[in-house]
Structures are given as structure tokens and as C-alpha cells.
Length: 65
Length: 308
Image (tube, rainbow over all chains, first blue to last red; front, side, top):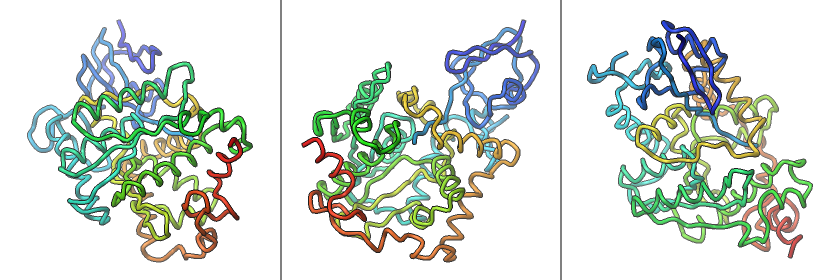
């Protein structure tokens, strides 16, 4: 099984056992541009992702013009 | 990773400060930082009446929440732009802003652009040549005009916006790429009301990263509009933010250093007043009284008068 990352409705799969930071870089998401939650709790980028879990990512960048 | 202050599990790691905090200490840390910057940049005093421009987004609602918690007298100003984009963008952002104000018993001014000026922002942009098909330029000009107007009418000591460090660094990046002397000369945490018709503008979040503000809103349980403005897709400011975040990933603190070095350089006199040639030619618009460098009416009044 893998780890599922969800960002703005789009799903990504990564291998378990990596840090959150490493997994974000793997899927080309800038760690500075998101917050991550596990079961509704915010987690830091050194967290090791566990087999079968789902991590929800919240985009933080907004802007205009 | 553990909280630096209490050894509980951290919820956020701010690499630029080498600081990881738990939820409780982070929610204390953010308002304390804002208070520090209000004092450092001499933004306003404890008893001043303040006006906060609120869009329904994470930054402005968090700023209003922080000011309320710090005990400031801050009213809100929401500007309804009439943007739908298939997601009822303006309707939803107004609903969230009104709910936020009602929960805290705060006073909110609402200015509805389509009601007051008989056109939505996208309609104004379609009618005029300003912005080359994108409404962002018309939107920015309209918001600046209304914010200044309500600030003056209400005799507020300052108008506060929720610009965070990423907003400021991206604007600085764009202004530097194009060597826009006038913008560089004026950019900073405080824009003084040094002309008749202007309200003082301040940015209390200017040293807090966008990620920190999103974390504050989320951890505080502030319901904000998560959807991006439908017209923001592909915008330069977002592109610049992404570039700066690439730099930040390799060099934690790069964005903060870029902005702080700029402020220091400004203080050291790197920019001369003549970098802002428009400032010399300002006069009061005969219709609205706000300063303008254009001959006759200001650009906003000319745009609105075209429909009258």
C-alpha cells in the first residue's frame, strides 16, 4: 500500500516511510506552499508517512494581478 | 519535532526562524509578533480607531482576529466586487466575512460595487481598455479608491491590509525586475497620508510568511474562502511567489532577508524622492477629492463617469 496525498481535489500516491518534506518534493509540490494535515491535525515536514494513510494538503498561496 | 517552548508535539516548523511550535504556542506567537511589528514600525496607537480591509481570505480575517484579540478598536471593510467565476466567489467571501464579524460582535462596512456603481468589476474591465482583458487592474484601482474613501469618511487613524511577507516579497521582486522606482520608493510597512485626501495605510502582517497566516487561520478555526479568485490564475504575483518559494526551499529565510534588506537599504537612502516622479504632480481629483497624477479627474472617477 502507499500513502495518498490530496491537494485541491487532486490525488497523488507516494511510498510510505518517507518524510512529508521528501514526499512533497517527489510530487513537485513546494513545501513552503502547503500545510499538511493528518486526521485533521497539522503535521510538520519531518513526519514519516505511514502505509495506507491519507494526508490532506492545504494550499497557502493566494494572489492576483 | 517538538515545540521549542513546551516539548509537546510541534504543528509547524518555521525554518527561517529555526522555530517549531505546538498549536498553543503558535497561536500565542503570531499575535505577539504582530504587536511587535505594530510597535517597531510605529503603525498606530492602542486607542486609535482602525479600519481593516477584509476580503474573506485567510490573511485579512486572521489580521482582524489578531487585532480583536490584542484589544484594538478595528472595524472591517468588505468590498463586494460582483465576481462569480462559477463559484459565487464574491457572494461566498461576503458570507464568510459577515459571519466572522457577527461571531465576534465586530462592526463591518459593506460596499457593494455593482449596487453603488451599477457594474461588476468584470463588467467594468470589459468596458474599459484598462487591464488588457483581465479585471485585476480595474479591481485594484477600485478597491484602493473605496478603501481610501471609507477610511476618510470614517475618520479612521489608519487603513490596515492583510499583506503578508510573501505578498510584499513578490511585489518587491516584480518592482525590482522592472526597476519601478516610484513603487520601490513607496513600498513599506507604512504608507504615510502625506497628501490631502489620503488615508494612512499599514501592513501589520508584512513580516509573517503566507504559510504562517494560513496555519494561524486553520488552527484558530477561522472559516475563510479557500478558492482562489477566478481571475488570479496565471497571475504574475503567484508566479513570483512560486519562484521565491523555490529559493526559500534551498535557503530558509531568503524571502525574509530579501524584504528586510530592502527596508534597510531604503532607510539608508538608496532611493531618492525623485524615484517617484508621480508624487510631484499630484493634485486633488475635482470629483472625489483623492490625489491623482492624471490631469483632471482621477482614473477611477473617469472610469465611473463614462457610464453616468
